[in-house]
Length: 405
Image (tube, rainbow, N blue to C red; front, side):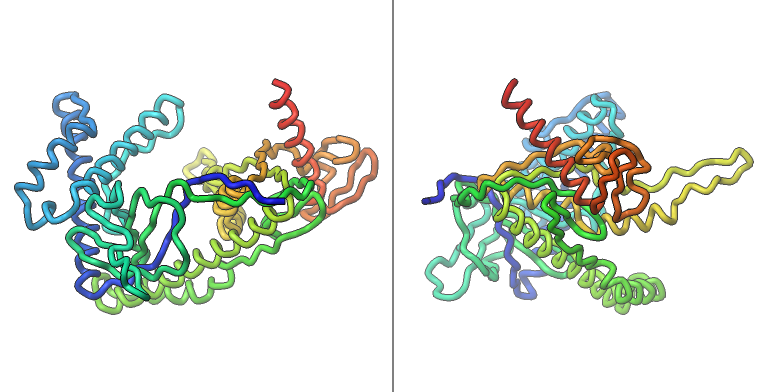
């Protein structure tokens, strides 16, 4: 049967191979955009504090013309479009702040960006201050042209599909990447398999399906923990600002970057296995940020604190973050959309305490991490498989209710 085609938005990331002069220019471009972001933030704060006035994106964008004219060798070098994107980034931060205030969540007022907190510059349209594949007639190499920087070589390791809409340059440690956001990317929907599964996220195994299949958790951070600890100790001993400090910091950053790449690669492979096997996948709607919060201190009333299990909680938090649940679920969602699979998220509450065959719910049903034994009917199963079965049942009930509504 021929697969149906649809169109999705997708990002393509490629390493850049800048010359030494281009690398200096990229770093200066990033620094000038950071200063623009901080200046715009200070403008908004001062206007509200002094006059009670709200400054919006349109006013700050209109002032860019004067800023560029007053600083032709600085801000005037870069693309007007990229500077507008930086101001929009600040505007989105304020919009998110006010949205959290209205919903009663922790607001998180927008903060000034330090040198290590601003690593991306975006050009809003291909052809406006930037040009992808600026040397189309070159037989072996690909270039991206960036205003004020020039034609930068790109290590294009796969074909770009769809229409390039925005171009971003991102710094990760001492490496540079170009990120292309493309519309109308053709997606091949996979042929139906007729299979459905619930998946339980875990630390011992990344996922366990209701069929009993398990995908291994590679624990990439734990595997590199010794080398990271050595590098961290060396960094602590080095004088800040010294050549040795910069060298060790670069090595530490490279180790963390390797762990991130390993985790991302494992998440892609695990998601692909599930997408190729099942038509319907039901997973837990996990709030990973809330699950990995630090244990709240408990005062004892005498100037000290009661034991709150902070050490054990920090170890669990580290294992959850090392497993990369959030990254995995994001990738699974994108692949499911592209492949035409159905992905359902359900509330995970009590799925690990409920007996799948009889429905009896009690915390005594799961006395160990691996074994589930129902105190009502005596059903025995692997605890993760039992939870995955409950997750699948809840997802199908949610889907049926949505269709009936």
